[in-house]
Image (cartoon, rainbow, N blue to C red; front, side, top):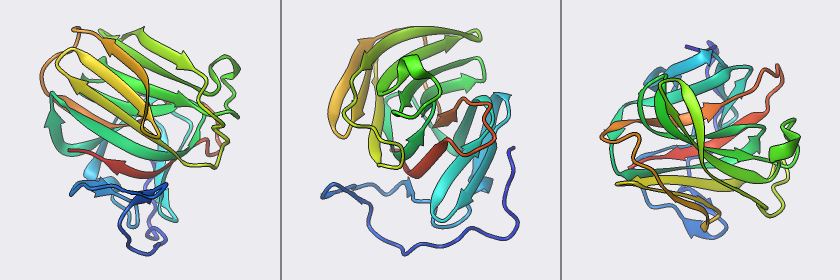
Length: 203
């Protein structure tokens, strides 16, 4: 597991999650108002330093580091997150182990991955190998520090990625089926914070 603060996370007021005037209706949302890292498990090629502070889930360093929500496993469903910093950040579905899962990656306009700035990509990781399932550039004005609502769903063989409610990727793939874990994912060797989640919602 990554670094866990010992002095407790800073608190922000409890509130119904809203984004651009839309109320998020879900009984399963972690808004990171308190330190909930004990409710997650990390899978990684190189472990990231995950922390919760000031109402955000943060990560530094880490290579292909996934933080899954304990006890949440499903085949068909959607997860979403409000993301404010995304150097090479994303959401994972149907994780069987560290070598087999789907991941939707979002990259902001300040990422050091210059060729992928302002884009979303879906990969499948099968037997430890990554293959692109779908990719689209042109996310409107993803300025680092400005929230974006990323959602990733799997229903049968259909994989869908939306940003702020707009569908960017609609693809099909049958490589990974059945129930699996879900969670957040980062990929960066930077020691400064380049990944920031304001909330995580699951079925």
